[in-house]
Image (spheres, rainbow, N blue to C red):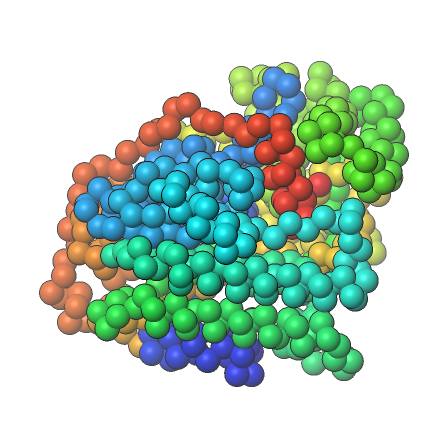
Length: 526
């Protein structure tokens, strides 16, 4: 998608970096989901070793899956390693960095922070300075207050995103960059939000699904200008922070594509006889969902969350007669109701392998009768992607769907497939982007061999620091010139630590509600 933007002249700063540096596709995690993806980047480890597989933890005895935060990541983060080597760091808006931990420098947490009223900065003295400049951690999209199918509301959303970008950039330049740093990292999430909420306008502008006639609207103009604003912000940051000896690394935690159909995976499991709904509760949940937009206007946030929990998908399942259940939207996963793991599990460990084989085989046979095509592109045992002490917490099966399809655990009696509404057409894809630029970086394009876990060891190597033994990622030496590689062998350091935060913190009820609201607006939760 960026190549057409560069060709159209939207991104002159990025175009220069691409022309002068190394670029490549960057493989995300499976699923290509924000929480495990950023955790893999920050640690250089796979989810089986850092402990984050989704936005939510495993099912507990209350049949709830609480949201993850920084304490769920069971390994040191890149900037913590840099701080330990005496480097001053600055980190802005990286997801899953709340609650903040001390660093040698400054840190402003990103996605999964409940609100600007939280303790979201280190040192704490930065927070009032940011609030005074109208700093927003993440734009809240309240679907019950706006109908984003209405053009004027969609236009307002794009303008709000751009305003948030500009306020954050001003705070970066006026408050944070003057703090200095040997290593500075900034996450611009505006493209992600635009792709979630305005994909069809990008499709029109860039002919992503082939040239099609369209009538250009103010929304099209606003989307283009928002991308131009992101590139301008990038240019300003580089001008302020990147001197002649600075190397620049860019990445995205995943790619993007269109979506048109939701696959109701719990319903499919029920149809196969592996999941049983509690009598009557599925119908009650469906009726409540029809009135939820009206209810949201009048109930306090905490009470609303308790009401949602009472009829959450996990609470309408008859666990005594359920052998498998699906993950939430965006998780692309099936869990076996294991006796030795789930709070009300019934499947003995000796029976797991056979059940998993049967589910995988039937998944590959799933066909959308409306399109006449197979829906599941590939299925995997969890051990094919996850290795480490936390693998037992992972879903038992992960899968990939055909382009345009996404899973949901939402109840839909009698229907396996439903259309995606126009308010959220963009969805994650596994291939993101990688870029390196600066002294001793070769000008080239590489193939699709790079993964998110490769970035931490590569950045450590770039800074002349020891690379811990036992990381899952590798040093991508081929981005550097041959002369640099010859003069700078890899210096291996001590073994990688895991399980550094045995006591994980959970959000308050009100904070859980805020997080849920944000994730639902992006399509990550049902």
